[in-house]
Length: 196
Image 1 (cartoon, helix red, strand yellow):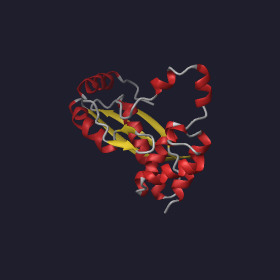
Image 2 (spheres, one colour):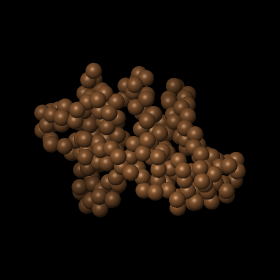
Image 3 (cartoon, one colour):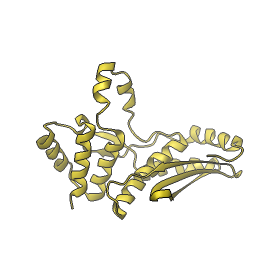
């Protein structure tokens, strides 16, 4: 969704993207050994260039019919023009902690997307160059959403990475979570979510 005109906000976004520095990837997912930028790191990199470009961001929670939670991210310009996006929240556990974790994840991704900045390692290039047979095999592999969900659970619950790695090795006879199938990843998420 967007305002009737986006001429001024488009110019401002162009100015912002020229000013913003590379966002520091200051955290590592221990299961996937992938680096990513925390929400704090993203805001540290974007706050000043946003202001200098006449831009601001508002992120709010909303509820769709049937109690589906969403995060709405609105990019605002001093001219009054705006661009808005929404992301469904899919908490692992339906409690305040689960909603909080899903919200943090959504805020990070939505903020990066609406501003056109990179906050995670790009693993799509590797999968794009994989031969067709291997693509078919990997199609049912662990997803980026599952990877982020696992990371969020680990961080929110303070789970040591050794706990998850041991579970992966003993249950699935695999050495790394990146080798898990979609179903195995769901099992791992359920296991981690059940840890008190």
